[in-house]
Image 1 (spheres, rainbow, N blue to C red):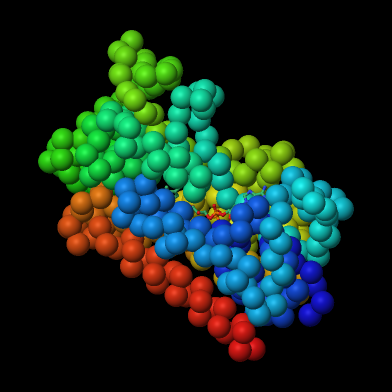
Image 2 (image 1 turned 135 degrees about the horizontal axis):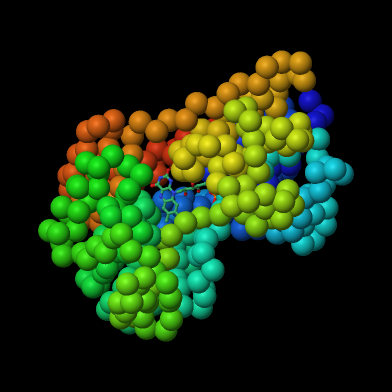
Length: 351
Ligand SMILES: Cc1cc2nc3c(=O)[nH]c(=O)nc-3n(C[C@H](O)[C@H](O)[C@H](O)COP(=O)(O)OP(=O)(O)OC[C@H]3O[C@@H](n4cnc5c(N)ncnc54)[C@H](O)[C@@H]3O)c2cc1C
């Protein structure tokens, strides 16, 4: 097959898609600004010194050696879908098919980023980790899963933590039983939760709530939301959710562009698991002829895991389990995920 596929981004969606397309005989070029693949869910245990940098990352150049996938470390600055070109800081790449897997950035709703820390990228997490020894009081803003995990991990490190959320319960999009289990743990560990009020100002040393109350804090960690990659938003003129795709993960406007993970507007929860599983559908659909019907993505949202530092929670359907042994589940998931990547690579090398 002499079709050129450019995979933009080597995260959960991109790396697996590149491996699968290469095994189907496509010429694959993968571009990423970083030289490593990052297991993002491990950033929180990394901050808490439960996971080392080496265990979070895979070096892309050595991992892809001998696979036939061409890896190029470049920063993408623009995509021109009319000319089928990806522009980078060091050149331009023409494609027959483009897979957009550029992930997401933090979304701070306009608050001054000088007074905020976040944990969405490796460099942000490393900065928080390095500052922690000098900090006692931390406010975590955003009570979704990332906020809950961050607050619990920092409490485990002995910090005085308050989690702040706009809704009256943490994990407000999940079943109430999960929120109750989180609150039980927070009460047991004396982690503060302030729900049902909005942050209106963040400045050096404090944040202000909509009822006028000021909360003193030495560090604010923002876990209040994400937005699709800036490159995708700018190149395609999209909103926060990213480029629209159909259930086959193909752009309705540009038939040779597919998108997955956090940069795609696909109506599914933006998780590592969904991003990774979307790679199957994209590889299948790019292999189809133009007249064949596209395969549809079926999300898998049956099992949810939240690490609480000293314990862990899983939710399956209406059932929620909280056990100390579940804090190791994330490590098991990471080991299994890296193993599956290595198996895909081995398959390619043996072809
Ligand atoms: C702290 C934290 C905890 C999380 N915990 C969980 C969890 O427990 N379970 C779960 O399922 N999900 C979790 N998630 C969400 C999950 O990590 C994301 O949904 C997932 O990483 C999305 O995959 P992706 O491939 O879209 O993006 P990413 O994995 O972020 O990959 C995007 C890639 O694009 C590259 N890139 C970006 N811009 C450019 C550019 N301009 N030029 C070149 N390359 C570029 C990046 O370097 C990166 O390699 C968590 C996220 C965070 C931040």
